[in-house]
Length: 335
Image (tube, one colour):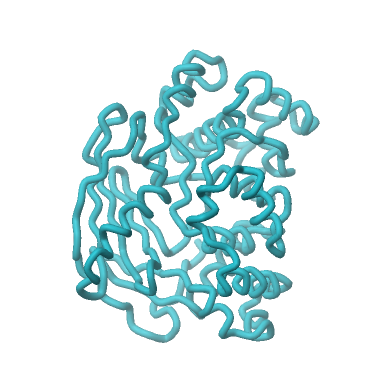
């Protein structure tokens, strides 16, 4: 078992947060709380936690560290989510009013995927996954900057190594917070990252990624990228703006378009590990050509290729919670 982080990140006691605001959010149906607040294919990190019907995550917003607790109070067809916001003290006037739309975006509460579920609920491959997880959507949860930091630690690393790198960064750059009976990590800002020299980052055993961390942080630190403006741009403009970032290649860009900007099509690449999994899942073969997998999704699920992939992928990892899938465990051990 990999320890997620040291008891006191950054050498300081946890910052205590108290509940300062509550509201009920009304996601667009269909909406599946657990399938959106937990993605079992993602590796664990100490900034979030989940239990059936409840989810906790930390957030940096306008120079404040926050804790968020989500509680499921509805159904897939009549969804309601009770949100409690935790903070170190009284928040400025209008702060929560501005924060809630950001939370609605990050947790993708307004996207309508009813057409997808209606079109493919009887599909041979997708039907069972839709029956189990109807209302599952891509969810950003983190800011674009934080998501990019996660993608950097994932690059060319096994899961255990990625966890170790992320938690080392939390310990050095973040600050633990304590709320709702939990101690959790918070992310760092670009400015906090840039206080460390590349050599200091390398001491955290992140290797060549130290340069990437700093280059991305520089782009966000000088505000050459505004995440909220990007959300209003057409896809082609987003691809240019984000694709110009140091270290962002075609695969990373494709993940971002789906997981942060919620484009449901655009499946262009199948990375090697995902190709192995989909080969077994769809074709019961150890490995098939990437073009064959792409053709499968584009032919059967036009306009929703990436979302269809997501349903099959996450459904497989939810199954892993309940049963041992020998071939999948072998692939995970190799990853």
